[in-house]
Image 1 (tube, one colour):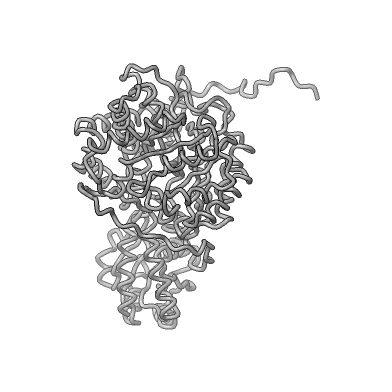
Image 2: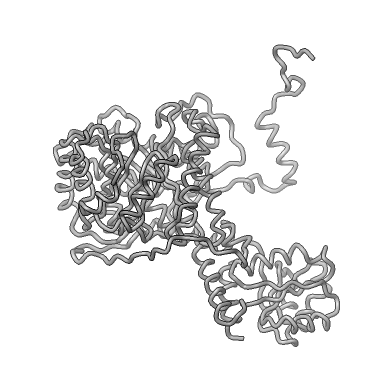
Length: 623
């Protein structure tokens, strides 16, 4: 068959317009407002269901064209020799950089290299070739030795030219103080010696960057995208002023600063956030009289999205986050291993973390296109909206006196706390779903292996002079995981988990949908749901409930069957000894009669599942 040179498949169709789409949607909505399809971010930014193409928008300048991002691998084993073995293995198997976490740092997650002593670093970097083209990022910790200067001395000791070492020193005093809620002295007293350290490393020939503006701290604490951007900008400006006051040329000072943001499963917001950071920093550079140039932006997959339960889902979360950070133009990405919330990851989890990036780079060729989101109406709209929201908050921080002053006044912390509360509310109502934790639980999941290394506790320094509210990291799944832990403890102590009897009424067609909902609802909290055949006879229902020996019962069926049978069924369950009776669904006009018959609570999508489950435990334990 011979095909023409040009085959226009859509030639027989009229061009589709936005107005055509709106007419079709209005027909489906049947009078409901179009705003029903419009959603909002935690910053209050509007997300439309469809966007027109954004014409004439240039790509955001970031990572070099067609250049891969650096595949960073976290190194955090407390034993320097074991950490060294991990690092060598990672470099030999695809990682192009090492992310060195020191104990007590804002991203240590309870582990990390124990100290920055010369001998510790010699063991850690044994056989690591500093000038072999790999990237090394370290994270010095205030009050625990100067890891940057110690590593610089080790590099010089090995007679390696500092100019040939790709080393990010990542001094981040303000981020560390923000996470801990303490400062050893006012910022003005710390800034000058801090600038002296950076200036000294520059004179020794190191390229840097030296200072990290780490917005991830806000994301870890439950903050929004705009808050994370504003915090990162305020840190960068504080460091820029510090370096300039330390007699470092302004152009060299801005090159000494890099950024890091968290990447999570909201891929569109993550892409927009990374693009927005570059645009916002370019605006600050221009305000300083500098010609904007690409800055180094690192990404780390989000800590707060990790779950302990069904941790394999964390692999999918990491893949989405890595994709978004890569498309958003990140220069380096660190994937947190999927078991990190459970303990120190072993070899398999570390391999998966590496390969998540390698597959996206080598098989999906994700880095081959510069700023692929450019011109997308949705992403361009989100990017611009984030820029405006973050800039307004950045200005508020500056008016307060800058990053340190805003932390002292708890300005940043109050704003983050408000967003964190909104996150917690949506998690509790299961509006924001965490698969394996707040939905689709598996009470029989097998334990996942982690290394037998206990997390370390680090007390605040005795030199503390200033205290303020800490931006403490959270994990969104933690409230549901605490209930699952409680269930495991009961299983271990009593040989059985708390139970709820699913009192199914009518036929399978009647009850299956709500029985499935109820099973997932209760088991997200570790309460085992005992299924049953459909009942029409209240007496038979009571016999089955007694045989199950559960203190709780939940009626499950359709609204039609509820109207016919729910009241008698509730009375039978109460007479049979049910301590608490739930009904799956909204009661509507039947609620007074149902409550009078013995129904205590109604469970439904959008209700406060966490509160119901917490109360259910109290009832089950009192039985």
